[in-house]
Length: 270
Ligand SMILES: [Zn+2]
Image 1 (cartoon, rainbow, N blue to C red):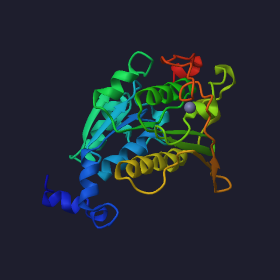
Image 2: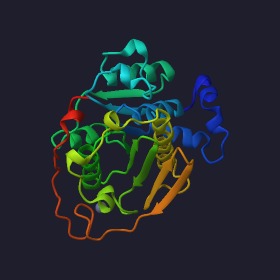
Image 3: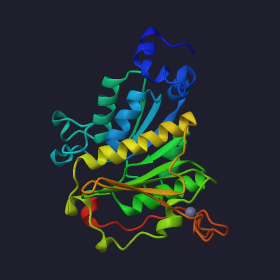
Image 4: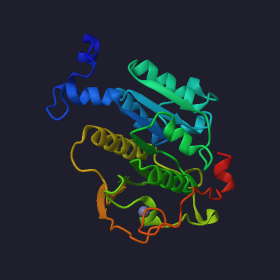
């Protein structure tokens, strides 16, 4: 595949990087990334991956755009209020970069559909842009069972965290966090608030990990949890040990099927 003149110009700042070059840009155009949740984290991740020329981007979200989303979910505009988020996201991406094929899944993920969604385009990398523990454990277990790499992240108030799972290269999310906390003790962003830029900071780190994984560059956040505190401007990298007793990726895994955990009612009615 040869680049068109327009593509040569569009991606020139990538192509000029010796670590990327034409070969790397072609890899990006042939790559497929699934983004689960087009909210605070998924919106900036999707926009940067689209701008970078990731050829296929899957967007998963059942929700519609709400006025209260626009403080941080920058892929959606005021005119998009009440539109399904996946449609609004697809339109923004199509307007930004016609090279990207956007595949939409207007669904809530659950144990019954997540495997089919990941297999639908045989995605290379998955981004967890969700805002609740049941979804995070579900994405983790599905990726472990299917042998897919993914980026986990969470944001609340002025704090964010992210880690990357690559099969056989480090611990999974469950190795570290074991089981979801009971729904009643978990504050959501709606209850606790979140500084809008947190999604941009952490979501673009997730996009960076996806690009590095596809290009085979640098060191990923495997076996490391990166935390960020916006008030002190401190990033910390916490080393995560391998957990041989992990229920899903350990030596004797007890989880062989996906689990739908209960979710706080307020989250379901966002
Ligand atoms: Zn594990």
